[in-house]
Length: 192
Image (cartoon, rainbow, N blue to C red; front, side, top):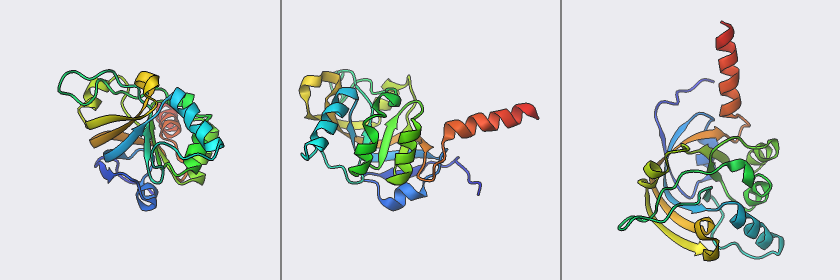
């Protein structure tokens, strides 16, 4: 079934199972609501908590994680530049966080086969934000506060509030991957 990706889908966190199931690789999304940040160092601590049977410092059910280490804010702004970091560095930790209830991940770049299988298994999606556009993306973040591990600096876990944050679905719950589809489409078109 072919569908148009021209009109953005508007979603608000936390994501419901219906929200996630409605998305397809290639869909443009405008995301609003609470999103939590976590990068490499925070992921290691999150997994240590899960391994110890301890609660995480934020709710997980239906939540979205953004792989970002924002710069300090300018006066009067809630956050500095907030562009995505490379998602592959979080791949070793991702399946456990998806099993804990996370329904959306935001970053840049492709994901491993293990993560893509975990997205299907746990009915979650991977979104890409535009790399190199951190200052523009920051304009869509209305508030930011550290909720855990301030000692990690830019990599501390933060609670952000998004308003129409622009994303593209890369990996959906059906196993489709926009990067693979794009390459395959290019190969077909270039042979024509």
